[in-house]
Image 1 (cartoon, rainbow, N blue to C red):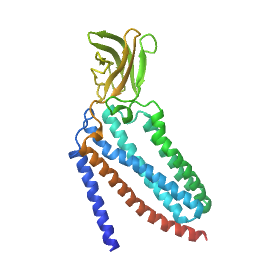
Image 2: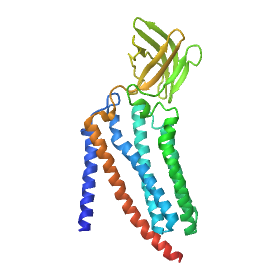
Image 3: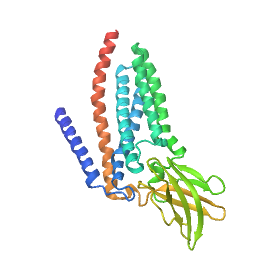
Image 4: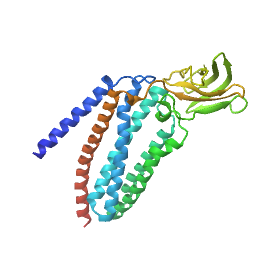
Length: 320
């Protein structure tokens, strides 16, 4: 009976993953401003959430190990950390693919990219620590303590640091029309050059013509052989009017505010259209993807934990 249930679960998981892949390309509509690149949210975000859950679970097992000194709990902590690291790599790779499609570069040291790389290094050090200590009891104890502290850094690296840092390239700033990110201020009489991620912008002029207030901004960016000039504008009510596209990218430059008399403007990088999850098909596929990736991680964890449990028991017996 148990074997039949396990077999059914595996078949169901395989069908669910196939359905997610199918839906990602053939059911989810294109996101205005990003086109096909917007589909990657169906994979990228769930893998990031699974990463967080796996690392948190690993820390819980480490805490339990410190209380019980059970080799099985230590093995469970290792298995969860390995699954977390695997999905962290998935999240990093899918994020890099998205960055290349939208911004023309796989890596631009955006705060989120940098913080997830640091998280990978933190857990790489966890595995290195386990490999460097020969005494079994001491290795497990030190690894458990380190794992708890590593988990404490995880929310900061994944959720806090990217929002504290000035990030205009990542979705929390660039995906939404009317982005809440402050953008950058430019001044003809002062700091007229600034940077939006890896895009250098220079204010050339700002003036009001009729009902439009228009800024002329020169753009320099990686892969662009010649400087481009964009002219974002505001209408008479002070709302963004023209949003010119950055060269070779899906994103647009938006003029948030301007003062022609003072020669100052504030600009940002945005994508037009509604939020990715405002579409019902996208929302349901996204929720199903989170659930499916969660079960996939659980299945991989159980396989790896079983192997490590056997190894831990053998290791303990040999030590005695």
